[in-house]
Image 1: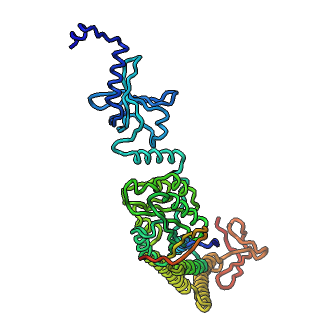
Image 2: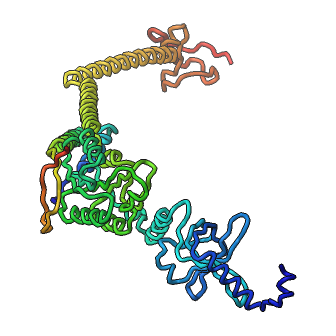
Length: 403
Length: 75
């Protein structure tokens, strides 16, 4: 074949060959669905998107022009698996081919899922999910507005739970379409209505479970904004336990199901009544205990309190005691004195000259001058001497003196 | 809506009173006062629990945008 071409003189120039290939390719693949993974994703100043679409065995250059990108519900990213409608094109100056996408959608997750993630990120970045904006849920709401389908199981579940937990809390039901065209607006209007009406202090926004498509209204930006703007706190109870919607993230409190939303909205009345009774009992008990204790204290103090009679008796006893002690002291003292006196008296007796005389001594003195004689040398013969005896005196005359 | 004492704050007050009473260092006059105030709070709470009237209504807007309230009928 190659030989044949050469022999017949059909020799292609590069341009001719390229153009031939281009028309072959572009005719053979006018519009095709392609799937693959995005890599090397780049958006230069032109606003077009350039990337490589690949699978484990092969890669192909791809482009999506700015105009087509406008219809995309999500932003393509590296690593994302996509499916798209494309045409094949060959760029002659470089001899390279690429696919030009007209339409792209995420594969697997689906475009709704991606749109969900992207809206979630956008609102999160705007702060709509921030804890600081969460309004406190009233402990005991005076009335609850329920925004949900007027006919589904959700409204009945909520009413049942509310009856069971707190049978006499008033409920206002604002029936809305929870899915389908215009349901977002109905939900937003209902939230606004409750805020205008100002009768309820809590809103439950609920619907039963469903597919991502069914929950679309609860994943819409306008519902998210309406929830965020509500002055009345909102509890969401959307879908089944595992379904998280954008509304759940913005809500002041998220319940996994409509029934759970009612549980979270209303305290259990039986428990509350029991708690109050318990507290009353505690009040009574502690006051009674206080009174009993004070009573005991008073009785004890009374027992310690002395009657005046006792006081007088005590004084009398003390007085008698003092008296007795005084008398004892005195008696003792007198005895002591008496003994002293006797002793002194005896001493005195012993010193009395008369006592000496009594023992046979006598005192001699001159009659003339009454001077006591103690030395025979002082006396002369014939001197008159008075001798004092124990009894009576003798007047004598000296016969002889011995030296 | 008139600013009334909420159930929760009355309940909290009641619990605080019980706590004070149980701590036991109140004089008798204070204890009696606390007791009376505690009983008042608990009555207020119980009244509040029973006062609200059970009703389930449906709130809708008619075509002219007027709010309409009617009993909710669950078929």
